[in-house]
Image (cartoon, rainbow, N blue to C red):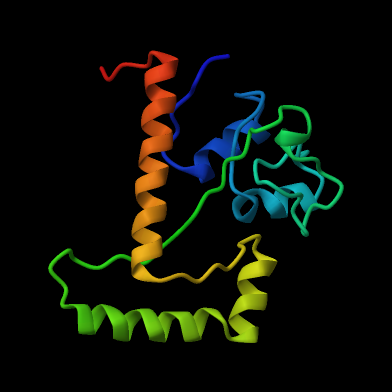
Length: 144
């Protein structure tokens, strides 16, 4: 399998639709319209559970136990932001993300809303960095 580095999902989806590549990993939110229209076929999702938007599409973990990759988004602030401001932002963001309308809209795009504290999010980022550092080391990949 040859890795083809596209500049984002848009060009990669166009290449897949045009037969330039045979498969791609993408987020549900980007590819869902093409899957729903029948232009693309979803083979598997990489999360721990099947997606409510694609309930008939298996997880990779169903065939390869332990294979779970979750994409995520977060809101970051400069490292020297005062704790009081971080607390205010965190509280406001948590309140917004948990409103039924926003939660429903994000879920309809394939996003699972998860609120956490700044400390828990920092811990999550550090765990992700460790996981992918190990994956790169095991793969033998080198930077050019």
